[in-house]
Length: 213
Image (cartoon, rainbow, N blue to C red; front, side, top):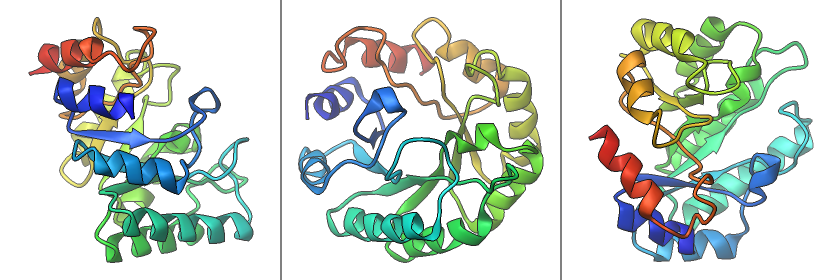
């Protein structure tokens, strides 16, 4: 749990807990969730993504996701991070809505992850995410990095920022975090903090936190 401790020491508000980060993250096991929560801070948001390979899932996968959300809640997580698309590239509201409902009923916050960046119509997609009751959306503005996605991030925040938290993520680092927030008007930001080479070192996280205060 060195990464969680590093985030706490650096002053981060929350962590997104996952495994297999090179695969863009998969759901961690129950032991990892328990250990992260036991650290006593920051708040732990658990990624709910059972398999690699895109964001279109069959009904059996959504059954697994429901169980993973229940498990995360029982282990003391503060939130979950979800997302799924239809084969046509729309937000899969039919299948995601029960996930959001369960999370809300369990007292968990809900972040819709970067599956959003692959949806066909970002504005309609964001309206669907809002209608489901998600608290925030993690997005690079449908660009390779959040820095590249500033125009869409700014537009979405101006149009919908009073209804949902727009959280830029993707390629966030010490040199661009302040610029991304200033240029988009967003008030939260997400970074993997891998560029320092050792995520257990809080220095990079602390530097980013200081740069955006």
